[in-house]
Length: 117
Image 1 (tube, rainbow, N blue to C red):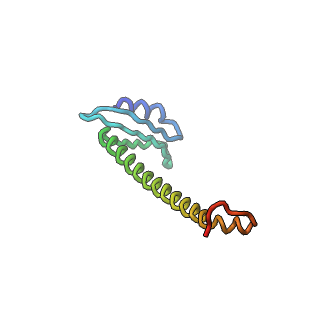
Image 2: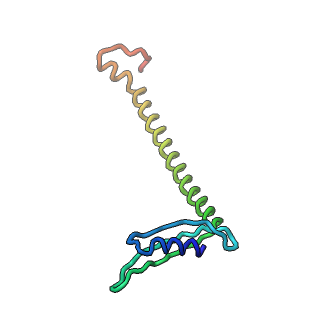
Image 3: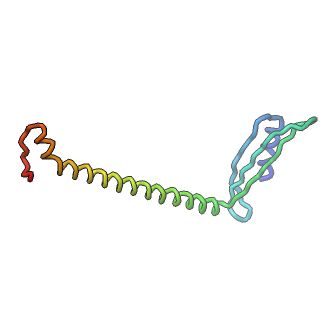
């Protein structure tokens, strides 16, 4: 891992842009290593800050599963509420049309085919 990081550092030593790379490695457990190389300038010199973050792949899978589950149940609740609202609105709209059908037909001067009281 150190060799990979050193080669990236050497390649980007004179760069003015940040470099980010991901590598999979093993330190007893399978891990994902994220390396951020951030150039910065001081009064007399330029240098490169190296930030490394390591997480186990098992933790990464667990967190990804948790995020997926949280997102899916929220979407399921949202879709359920939308279906319920659409159902209620359609039921009320059709009930209004059914009960007032003969009224608007009579207002137009037509004969209502349904038996309206």
